[in-house]
Length: 412
Image: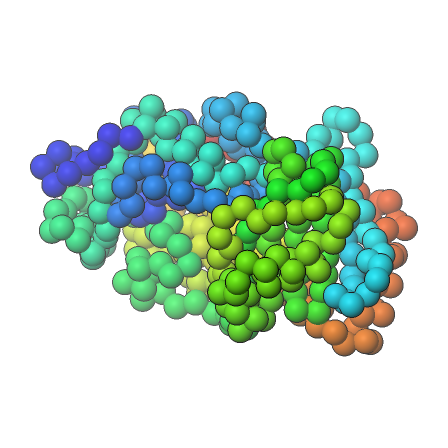
């Protein structure tokens, strides 16, 4: 992306996006791909290339993959993606000698394709940034200090004192969104008292594309396959325990990791330094304000138990891009209340529904209550024995049929 400055930044954009992560970049690219005449800017305090230091990986659902294909990005990252061809679910305690598999998901036909793909965040963000730059998205290295909505547009002031105007300002600046706070939009939700430890390991034996979700009393422990004999871990613990684990010595951390990981893939070695992130459910009371739209974690932060954080963010980007492009093609103001209300209606119900699902799953499985254990294990067993119900779960995960065009692989 061309790097903007106080003297070189255009005086006005059609859409300005605060946040240069995968949500902000996918929104910018979707806008330019659908309507190249739109003037689009990304505003982010991090210098270009900072994403290369992100050691995390994300699960890309089929609908999100179709969106990336339509935007010309998937072709560049497919070689560094790992297909998830099977997923198994267990429910046990750490002291249990055996972890019985209660539920297995796998593609039932070749045309179904993988359940999802794991992609390193650095690769995903790097390629999105490269394509956005090629498409003419302007990058402004800086932070939004303030903004004022007017009838004819939004006036935006940056931390360095420079200013510009836009028709729509999109907040894709994360769960602690400064723009959301400046707009006075409150969130509803709660903290779980849990933290997710994110780590990468290498293991002795090949994983064969199999993902594992082990439900343990403290929270789920997910093993997600990466290219080569590597795996990405999302390890949920009570916050106090998680902080103690990431601060512990290498021997203690390796011992606790092995207790949860098991020995199916042989010896394991930790790559890099694990990090812990607090977990909660937080959904914005409103997804829009005058000439402002919230996207990604700025609009919703959910538990990673279903691995849907990235995919919800991509849905936001696809939906907002589509309503803005539709308005622009009709000669309408893309920042008008009617246009942004259409975006909010499109995304709010789906987001709340996913938030409720992840909240219920986390409360149901992150405990050691004997009665609940019996109920949930019976439930998992029934789903395993009902192919049509399992197929429905798989189809829901693939989704996109009634969503924005990009999620169906169609051009906007």
